[in-house]
Image: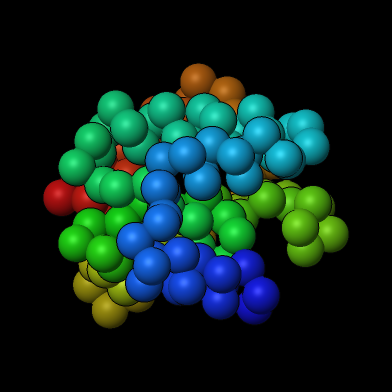
Length: 125
């Protein structure tokens, strides 16, 4: 919560640089979280270049018009066995009456990267 409060304060003061903040947070992560976060950052920048990188609760996130669309949650931060790629209610992933809003990530292979690219592009549309 302290990280979120600092993010809000930096945003109000005009001192927030989302891209720099996201890269700094990624650099602090241990492996394999760092490798996955770097790759997801690249995928988002390619598949949804109009999304703005920013931190959200201390994790890398990508926003449209100031609203988070998707985010990466490192496993180490919550002592979980997997990282998470999540989507907010601002993501365009609606599919009937029920759909996934978060995905567990143990690693990224070519097939998983292709799926992430498709999800991010659809969410950001």
